[in-house]
Length: 154
Length: 154
DNA sequence: TCTTGATTGTTAGGTAGCCTAAATGTTAGG
DNA sequence: CCTAACATTTAGGCTACCTAACAATCAAGA
Image (cartoon, rainbow over all chains, first blue to last red; front, top):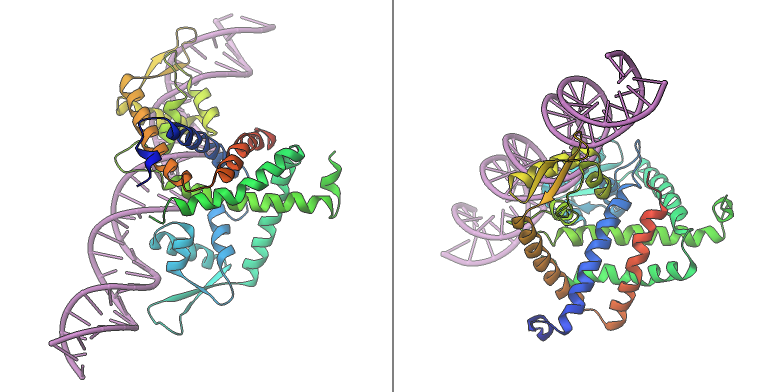
């Protein structure tokens, strides 16, 4: 299919080197993001989940797909959010098998607070970079998003 | 200290927007990296751990610091690697309290195999990007590494 | 209509990786 | 020596994943 993947060496070594460097950077990024967590606050997964909920309601399967996890894992998160009063499950009017998960006012407030704190903390680190570095970062973010799609839905 | 952090708005909103976009991209990257995992293979954490071991041996505390986890978590990983025959713990000749963790030949082979497979899979995705996109990605990787440092060791 | 297979979600049970607190052994300074 | 600091392991607990098995509902064809 892709000739560059079949060659014993050559063109491909650049791609594999980039892949290697990317993996290393992502490893660091994982620990970086972990350091943004705070104690009494929403966990990263809960925050991500809440942020995709609208007031119209999102189905459990859609939430799972957006998070990149299986349905039971999504259910687990939703139950926790519901216990915290940040989300509500209501029957889907169109399909009685399904459930619509909706964010509450408390949920909206919690998201805003967590986002504010995390962004402020990260902005502190970003402020120590040069303008050139920040520009490079900004240029690369859409590319990173695209790689996820290029890897295939799996 | 940093004036841009104290202003009610203005300069800072750019930083916070970048922070927000960065967090979103990293969220996707986490799921991306997770999709590189394969079944019978080394887990990501084990791979990272093995890769930092030399034949001279690394101490448990150093491994923990490099991984960004607490010492008992590192011990846990090391015990697993030892059971798999990929690493060995030997007494530190200079300090009897300490332990030197060394990679074995099987460990080296396992790292090489896992790296090869993961890089190939990721390179497949990278090959679908344009040259410009790949260049942007490459330029940003060192920046991402630097952000980790700028956030502080914590 | 009625049955059958696919779809949606939850429940049950298990694993991996992380944490804190407490225990063990070692070193080094007064 | 004695004590404080240090390196590691053990013990116990948490969270976020997973698969398998179940219940309910839908949709399609005999």
